[in-house]
Length: 137
Ligand code: ATP
Ligand code: MG
Image (cartoon, rainbow, N blue to C red; front, side, top):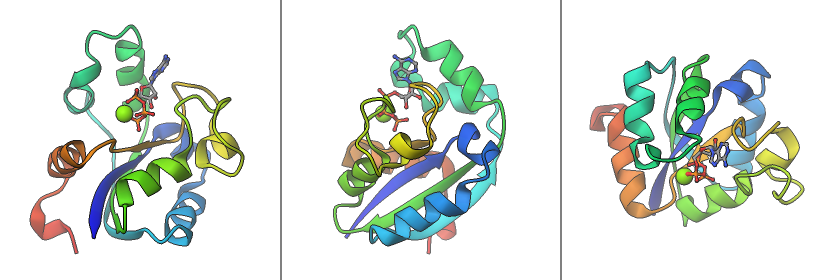
């Protein structure tokens, strides 16, 4: 059984669709085994997206991710990493398949509602970035 790390980004929290996104996780067979709301500091957001530091979208991404509260969660299930990315849809909501979170709810490439780990290595790094072992059930 696999675990992945997920963020419901500030745009989705502001749109009041936390429950709707949680429902999609559960319908897809992903179990929420840890969850909390937080408002990222500049340092937390910069550290989380450090791999993108040289990209032109990095500074506006950090600004967006610190613009309001987010939900962070650990999802567990068979092929959780790939399954979560499948139900999120493509990074660009215009390219995301109908029925995915981003196609249905996201407004732009930057404000695209959700984050999901893209590998086993990033899942364990990202889970540890936000959760201690005793916060995961
Ligand atoms: P995430 O890592 O959030 O799950 P992803 O893996 O689909 O999304 P990445 O390439 O890792 O996409 O980029 C991280 C985030 O940076 C994207 O989700 C999006 O919010 C933002 N982003 C990526 N590319 C662009 C871009 N060209 N313009 C604006 N924002 C972008
Ligand atoms: Mg990514």
